[in-house]
Length: 74
Image 1 (spheres, one colour):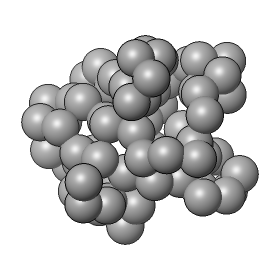
Image 2 (cartoon, rainbow, N blue to C red):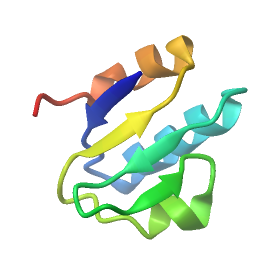
Image 3 (cartoon, rainbow, N blue to C red):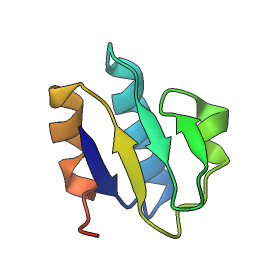
């Protein structure tokens, strides 16, 4: 499953990381500039530019529903 999200604040990023770390499955975060980060890696997520939407890829349906609050249309 793929979902585009927009994280606007540091609190959004923190909440996203907590949700990702609680998921038993892999979480991938991809930017439009071809940067890729592990959704469970603090350093990886901190290195991404969040001025544009990012794509989150995971097969965890529960996690994908939890991040719906940040979803954006492309």
